[in-house]
Length: 256
Image 1: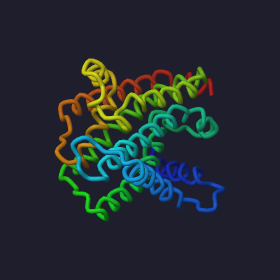
Image 2: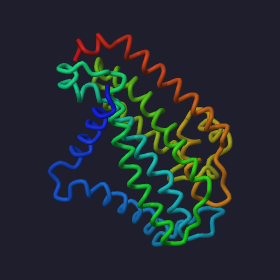
Image 3: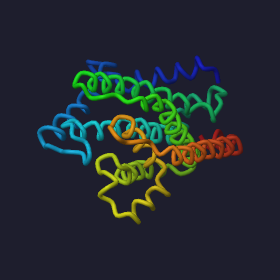
């Protein structure tokens, strides 16, 4: 599948998302602004939420947004990928598309949305004088790991979804539980040591989320060892997903 075709699918994904609305693609800018307002203004100032160890009144808001924006990209990529074969069955049945490559357009579409939201977030941080750290240069690597993880898991679920349509509902429940098991709203300091250790071993989004937060917040450093482990896991999962699709491709096409 050519890059041009993938980008065409990604562009259509973005167009379909805002089709019929008066503002159209402008919603890609409006939604991040609303998110920033809720987390930074309401949580940080009106509700006076404070982050331990950070003196700035914007600390907790920055903590929330730094975790939430990547999570939205991850969860949207996972849920959309998990249903991509069923959603695109009309195209798959008519055109000989590469099934392993097809879900990449979802990653591209969600990456565009994330970049827009991130750009607005950075503009806000500069406007309020919040210091930017050199560790922000790690952000493309961490985001790539995250999206590879979502893509690999999503493709496996997409294959299962062809034969068992309950998978779509399962993914919705999975992402809800996964969100609350990831330190986005809560901080790791409030979790008992034993439980936090279990979460570190079983939740690959934990080191990714804390890495994002460490890139923005003072006196914090990403856990590079944990990031390397998640990198290996994400690549292995994508490899398993590729093998699974190739072995079951004929069955998937026939079932669709």
